[in-house]
Image (cartoon, rainbow, N blue to C red; front, side, top):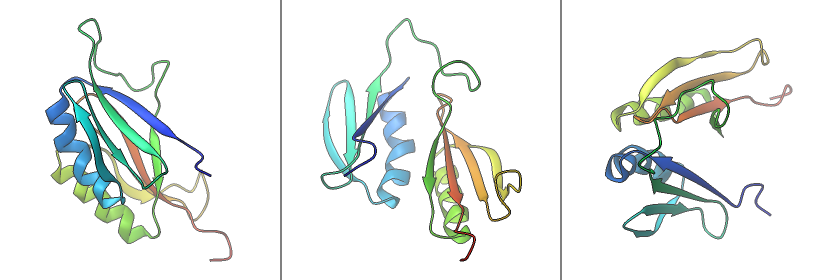
Length: 133
């Protein structure tokens, strides 16, 4: 059973959102799903779906730290994959918030990077193996 069925994210420009999210999501194993004039989706088989929606005229870009969305973290199988996904996201137009590094305040094994899209949507790529790994 999926822990998360679907996630809807509103972006300021749907085509820019596609250009930024598509390379990252397909590298994570998601496949293109449906689309119409106000949304684009990706799915992971019958599991989690991620949907981008166009923005409402009265909306402003997201500001990290305000009430609401904080970030979405994707667990990676290795430090090398954190580095690879970080570079892939930058190539797709995301901005680096924090370069890949260790975060000992979370655990002595925690290694992560953070990126934001043009609308301020923040994603983390993280590796935190079990203590006995």
